[in-house]
Length: 596
Image (cartoon, rainbow, N blue to C red; front, side):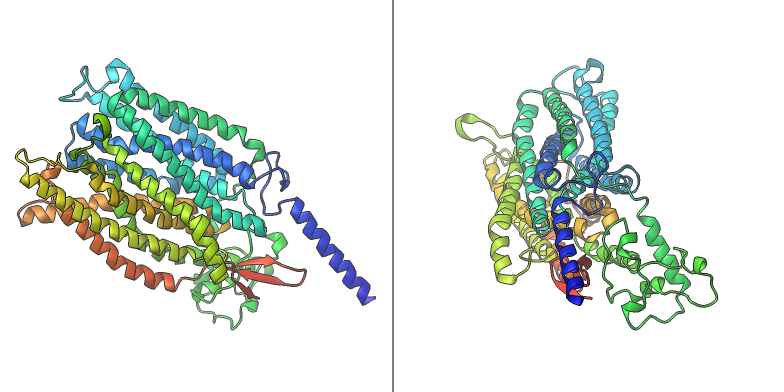
């Protein structure tokens, strides 16, 4: 009799496994609101649509961003310091707005709807930007060279780029997390493919940058800004159409309400029970059955931040069952662990900011340096200043391809780790490259200033723009480690209900870094001006960017030590995955198993 029951259980397990191979049971739905069929939805068949859209969006964004400082100084006649601050403010807003867009996507609108709505707003911003350069009364001035641009143009121009900024705020976090949602974390093959998704996502992103800083920038410099804007507007319109065509192949997640409310409930419940002793084992803590938890996966208990564990202690005495199970008095272990995840991310977020400050220099001072150098190559052709940014994209493509196709397979065999190396190690490697970039940039700038001093005309026109190639390539290689690692880290380590916000947290690193860069410029300018001579003069030849780059290298090098200390003590998300009828295993971000 027992043998027959055992065989029946085995048959049930095999049938369940076959069923899971056919259908996707990870809380996602198809476009008709049904459980998705694995063979016809998700994975690369849908994520390739999404990567194509990212290519188009990054083409539009970098077509504007890389030439923005040139437009502000050449057309709007702003001085170097003011233009650098305006670029940093715009880039800061662009990369902080995703916090709002990601929250809306996770809580109310869903990722597909948020991407679609923000893409339309982005498109309208591009139309307005085109109008500011085409409509006679809105153009900068009536002639090719503007001594004083029209106020109407400035107003429409800044309104347009900030509309694009807001559009990016919904587009970026929702699209990337929507792409990663196409892979089932509980399916071994799809889980491995998702690790490659972030690498190929960045390959598509860099390909968009390549076209932007070559073709689009060339049109801006040698044909017209208006034609470049028309092309970017058409590309965005095309990307919206492509996104809608892929609708039948996507896997969707329902918006689950505000992810902040459960976190607040955990905190309130823990404070209310602050006088209770912590249980000796996690078995005494409250957890909901898997069948009742619809918003994501159950998490395993961890030993850190034990004060929050008090939120999961059942109060047996003096309260009715209904009062004791009130979510403001009792939280399941999974909710407590989700709160711990977010708190544990704060030190990682803070220690990646100096890296972001280094990256922000590529779109301001690095580009401005290129304007002062000899950009002529074969047959007298002159490279547009912003096109030198292409080397950063090339560096990132080389880095991502090498990492995904060579380094990870070798390290997987050597370490037995699904990822090859863990996410925080990958981020740390890129930080080392950022220090190297700033050291090289300081040395190149010192060389450029010496050429200026030796030149009868006090210019650096005799020095080739390719002197900047090493700093762009190195920062691009560093981006392939740190930026891709940050994307994967913040998507993977946030609670399942906050994944758009997770990508927004990654983008907010760059946003906060841009604001900090502006603050640092203001502070250094003030201190050095009081000491005798500011490091930031009206033009580059009177500035001391070499000192500024050396300062950034020092700050980032010291920060790497702090980051290593924080990363070594970090605990990865530990997820329960059902292996058999009777056994549940806990898996961390690297696929390491701990029985519970």
